[in-house]
View 1 (cartoon, rainbow, N blue to C red):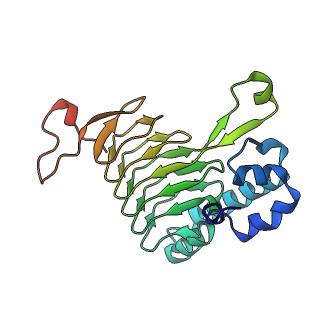
View 2: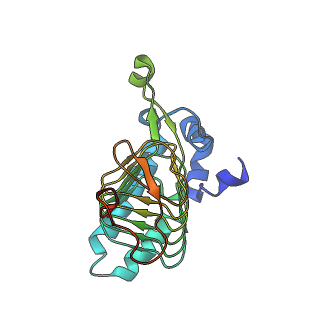
Length: 220
């Protein structure tokens, strides 16, 4: 296991590695079968149960909800703020930078590595999907899927109801307009939107220089 992979493995996963081939495949970024893996199903049940507790207690006991969030996502930095509900399949597979804000209905599906930078703004109802199911009919029926990493740089603003598909990277300081479906990498320092998401223009530098034309409409 490489040093990079160790960043995305917790003690619970490590204890199951010896007995589950599909878990080992997932951690290696190789084709695996979730539906045939007792360990992967157990891990997601436990993570989703933790999310349910966080969501339930958040407004009555926000400090405990935040503590449980950091226990679920050991790679979460200081100063992170979020609003429930959240759903994360494998908290150990997620790294979130300091001071990032995550709005309601945030979801990360699958076991691909997810890296979110510092100072990001993630709008409501955003989803990060990391599994690519097999295109081949027989292999898809057998349950084969490939976990792909998703990377969001620092100071990225993602508008509401954005979908990030397996394997994409969004560069530092970029903005993804609301409702976008990101299927390809987005460079740093640009505004991108649409389905599929495409680059519209460079970031407008300076106060009051954005939202001057129809193409520069509000993005949140």
